[in-house]
Length: 165
Length: 110
Image 1 (cartoon, rainbow over the protein chains, first blue to last red):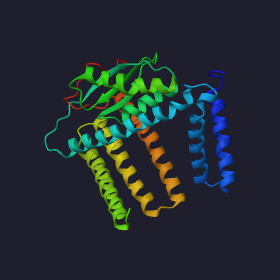
Image 2 (image 1 turned 60 degrees about the vertical axis):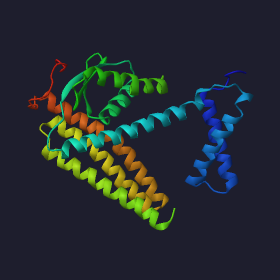
Image 3 (image 1 turned 180 degrees about the horizontal axis):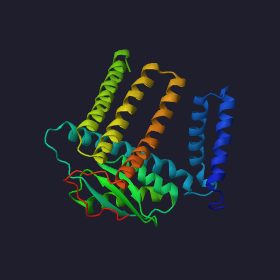
Image 4 (image 1 turned 90 degrees about the vertical axis):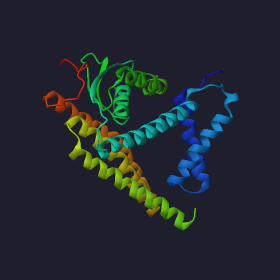
């Protein structure tokens, strides 16, 4: 039986638990549905020994949460840097273009990465090469292009590959 | 949380949000070229709008307002970078002049 349940299977079980909870709680309000889903997820996690451990279904929420946290952190940090750059009398910016080779392949992954880059400190996605292997960005702090590149490759791109791959 | 504590949170979100929106607007005036202006308007603008919407949701504390506020934040997060990307790409393809200090080493050929 190990690993016999697919992610889709677990998701539908989770939905059923959510509906059962809401019915027993006496109303299908948004709040009840939300609590039901969360509780169902916890219950399914708890009874893992019954159908095989290590399902992807339980890893994803953490990975998505971590990605979201990184995203918010980057957004706040970049806003402060940009605000400082705008308000300071002397300019520290060293704008430039950087080409980043891509490991992500699908449209969804590229979209996520491009959006993410546009909201991270001082970089803006500009274009993608014809063969979809290279992403061109404009950055405000290009004094060290290799560092910008490795930050993107080891940070965001790796996480996106983990979640979608 | 006490009543006045919540009000402090709401007030700080509003002030911080307004500050970032103001900075985004100022950045569009002050920055040297189109691409750098896009940095100002996407990042500071998104965070500022998000903070104002959070203050709004906390202040109303109604499910309908919270749902719409959350949806608005998500859509801004998804669409602001796309808009900046389209404007930036258009600017660079039509050959808008860049700031003198820009490093062009890895500029795409096109």
